[in-house]
Length: 392
Image 1 (tube, rainbow, N blue to C red):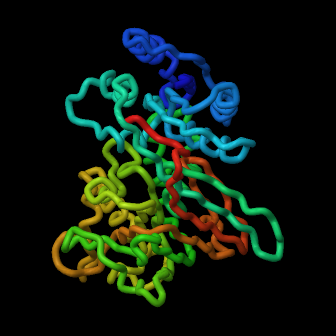
Image 2 (cartoon, rainbow, N blue to C red; image 1 turned 180 degrees about the vertical axis):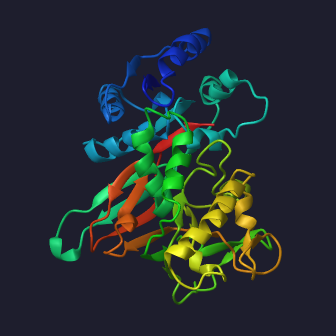
């Protein structure tokens, strides 16, 4: 099996080159694994070019040792999907987490207290050395369509971690300007504060997964998924009105940072088919808020931070409910704060007048939905020995 190693020297804290030279390459040599090609990326999108050239020069399955964050894997998947002129062989990735958040790696290998940092970062590589099984990646395929009268070809973005709008998309959009000043996750928190009162006016359709046949919603009382009350055999699609403070969907992961478990049920109750794990927060579900005003948005901010602070507590945000006094609780039968959905896909149709509602984040890459357009996201797992897999 052909072996290529690629690392992004400027991702995260810019330590990938040193880590490969001092840890990755020596470990491979100690175990008799010869790298056919070792390359570093030099610009955005370069990793996909390098890998496509390698694929075209080799036959059969290929193993990729990838030192980067989630963004470089995203670039590879999208470049190959858009530029390959022949079927892509199965690609098996040994991930070396060198990025900022490393959501996919942290989800496959949840961090433990007191764990040796170097040993932790070498787990996927060690799985490759041990010939351990790989896990196939589900892909979230987002299609951004223009208004029908413009007759433009839709834009496609493929993700292996997250597709989002609303607050999360705004955070990723604004945090990029802070990367040099704050290379760690702190920049996300600063961007979150700056966007805390932004609600997005949009209309959403939730689409069922083929096997389930209905949209499912997590019930914290029974700790299980149940059929959404508005999804039935006759009409399984669920229509959802905004405004949305938060709308995000994941595949393959239960967290976006090592401790930020935004979709925790993806791990505790794994899906049996390709699905999107959707979490959304709609402030007008709060009994203390009757309409969208600046005062209402401001008053909701502390609740928003309490909710997402609980995501750092092993995903405890999905237990929260609104009480009748405007507070949050884990008791009673008040409205759930975070609606946790499992579905086959979704449509996001932003209000033309709401600029913030037109941002779409795909594994950190930001796109803009045109006015009069929409984004449609669906989950899919490649079949017949193709696609992308990770050593776990």
